[in-house]
Amino acid sequence: MSGPSPLQRIATPTWAGWGCALAALVTVLFLLTAHLGRFPLMKPDEVRNAEVGREMMASGNWIVPTFNGLAYLDKPAFFFKCVGLAFASFGVSEGVARLPSVLSGAALLLATFLFGRRVYGRREGLLAAVVVGTVPMFVVFSRLVIMDMMFTLFVCMAILAGFLAEERDGRARVLWHLAGALSAGLATLVKGPLGFVLPWLVLSVVFVVERRPRAILRLLAPWNLVVLFGVVLPWFLILSERHPDFPHYGIVKETFARFTSGEVFRRRKPFYFYGPLILGTFFAWSMLLPEACVLAWRARRRLTRADRLCMIWACLVVVFFSLPHSKQPGYILSVAVPVGLLLARLFGAAMDHGGGQASRAVQRAAGIVVVLCLLAAVGIWTSVLWPVAVGSGVTAVGGRLHLMAPHLPALASACLLCGLLTAWARQRGSSRLIFAAFAAFLPIATVAGAPGLEAYAETRSQRSVADRLTSLSVNTEVVCLQCFPIYLPFYLERQITLVTDDGDEFPSNYIPYALQLPAPWPSHVVPRRELKPWLRARREPVYVIANQHARPILDHMARDAGTQVTDLTHGYVGLLVKPRKGR
Image 1 (cartoon, helix red, strand yellow):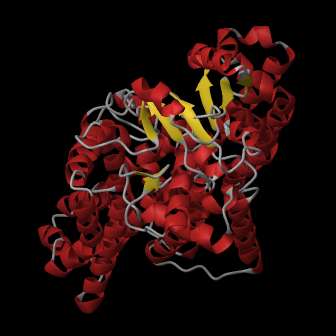
Image 2 (cartoon, rainbow, N blue to C red; image 1 turned 180 degrees about the vertical axis):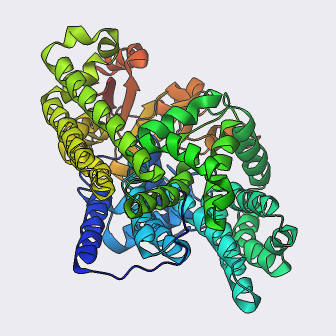
């Protein structure tokens, strides 16, 4: 990253340049949209979020998110509104449910390109967008019905707008800061207080390092706060008026407890969790990161403001989310943007100076990628031809490996192809070809691995449970006995009755919390101790679903009713209970 800064350098476009840009655009669009509705919704997050959006659309209640007819206040409403609006516009399906995340990912790539073009030049802006768009973690979250990508979009826009504001004077600076405040407010509406805390923290550290304390004060200018709270407070106050317990739950339990305790949300991970995660989910680009950090440190006195922003941003987010016990991969998704910008800067320097430090770093990273791809190809082929030879690791996932076995040769071939392409690019000594080989890794792996992933997803999906129940009449009440196949509300498009002790079967932290409050339970949540009298009071057929642990209860009910228990899928069983005549 040494040498003269390419700040504001705009390369003259050529036909070859436009062709490369078009190929990059097509590749990224393919990764984001190909077979978007082909995979079933994943449990628990995707199918739950899609159902919350569907219920919003069906009920017309755009303020209070609900799941299975119960208030779902684990997260704010904005993302669910977007899913509901997508359903209202294009119909209810898996692909439509994923549209808000896809559009958020595409918007973030555009923002990355525009920012990179402004601070580094057109070429680096395009390179940065390609890097981010071919990061496996980025693509995965852009294709899931999860709010992380939309949250990341608004957080990144808030950070980039706040940085660009301090590159301007007068009215332009004010407008950029207002845009940042608006983005922070929208991020807060997507996922809570971190939406404004994270951008403020990143920008404040940057301004402290640059010894610009007045810039920190400008972040908190009155009009910025007016915009921020003007976006957030109306929804918060209306929801708090309808659910007085929400402020305590949302601020204390959902935000503070999530940050300080991994046990509450069953997400406890070690401090170093994000290091291996980045190396694996940013491949092949991550193989360049260790040496890129060394080069950046050596050239620290020649770094531009944008370089410092990206370095502080990436390091601070990783450290910030490594401190709490609760950790999830999506927490550090925004790191893809500064990493993409820095790697674009490095590749740009390597392309301009073939024998420089940057070029040699790219060559060494390519060598590592070649070795890892070839080892992966050998390992996959070994697991196909001699499963016993790979040891206990395969045995531990035997069932899953067996399901993907027919597709593993294609995946091994893809690894081999990626390794050979990278080796060829390295042998040619071309940083441009190495960049193309790195960018090609994910598209090649996606094409080769998609059938196997689809087969695996189908086996992990509970959609087949819902498919077995589609023949039930509309008058038949579906009841889950101390279990909750999460797919049922979405795919049956009906409310499910749960028999439970405490509501812990729901895929929610708020619902069990609300059931503990001193208020009557909703009619479709039945205490376990009241099951028998509740069943006797039914005037319509009831279809009871249970898992294998509760099967003895259904067997006893079947003997009393003179009928049989039916085996469903995924370990569930069902029993149709008809009302007794003469009642």
